[in-house]
Image 1 (cartoon, rainbow, N blue to C red):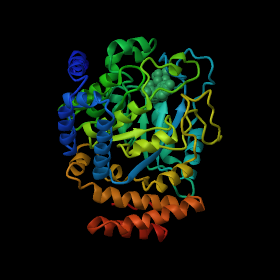
Image 2 (image 1 turned 120 degrees about the vertical axis):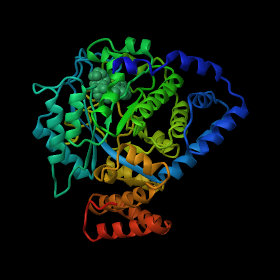
Image 3 (image 1 turned 135 degrees about the horizontal axis):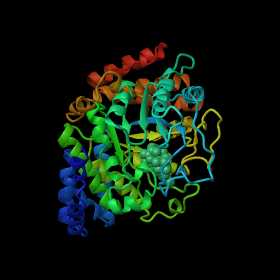
Image 4 (image 1 turned 120 degrees about the horizontal axis):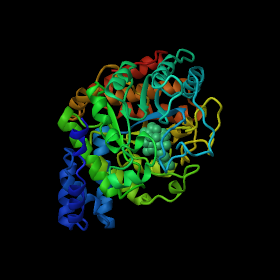
Length: 465
Ligand code: SAM
Ligand code: SF4
């Protein structure tokens, strides 16, 4: 497996393509934008042309095309989740991260299973249904079993009959056997970020522990898929290296998964480096990405892989998050804490968290804001629970058929939130949005949405199609 994957990031090819397209002419840009509007994705050369755009008018066109694609494929839905940090123990030395082994400035903690249950209850109490379980790369005594136990604890937690319905996982690379165990715990997506696909840079910033092995990390998604995990997420830590290189490398990774497994990644995450306790680099990234470049990255991804979800975390400010919804972001975290125990104890420990957050607002405030912008916050877990994952999901998504499920499910899960967890102000705004949205729908989706929302308003929960 290692030899097979070592070659699919072809650095020289990326460099050559980028060099050739540093200053694309207007015709080239127009051609790529027209092709992108067909929503069939882009090749490396085309992505490189878009990275070369600097002209204000062309950038606006790029953003508009991204907005059109986002609207056509995803409508106004925005999926919400919360990260759940179970442990900040780590044996690696990633120079940008507060959890790195030698950093003495943070308090180390791995939650017990009881604490994980309490932490999950605190998330359920806020109204969350989807959790991203996160840990550093060193587990307590039980080893990897700790992660498996923790997933069970999250699914087992209950509060007033409510529960977390989907656990996604972001932990260090596993063996195929371990991935099989992870799948058996019924996880949603397994995600892992290569951080940088550029070997030299990777070597410079990962200076201790197992994470030093670039190929073991790069091949982890292959092992996950071989183990039967259908939905996988990839990503890059923007700020470590030239973002243009990383975008093309993400395309190569995605194309390779499609070639080998018939389906690309379910999501791409776009973490941008934030200050972190005990890391000079995190405050001074070697390749800082400006706000404009960051928007450009999201828009290019939306054009390049239209059916792959884009995840934006609370690393970014509320303003940046708002701006990127229109450009293609389809999932956001909200009300996040990156210090283990941060939800139950209601502390946002800026020192012991993994990095500084840009958006500190509680879930209800984020939801209200999102709804005021006309987006439907969705807690839907329908596809995953009906087995519409991997290729099955893409087969529905590409001809547009998935919308007849996603739209109604987003509305019913949002209504469930509004009835059970929202503040009165958010309830009013949300309820009006739900009704307006149904009124604007037609045919089968409209009927389904009406029926599902009525069932929720009659006291049922967890209804989806
Ligand atoms: N420890 C595992 C690993 O490294 O793969 C799993 C989770 S790690 C806690 C999650 C992600 O946080 C990393 O993959 C990295 O991209 C991101 N991260 C680390 N330091 C960061 C920083 N200073 N700013 C923003 N994101 C950061
Ligand atoms: Fe550990 Fe992950 Fe942080 Fe690296 S990024 S130090 S592996 S927690």
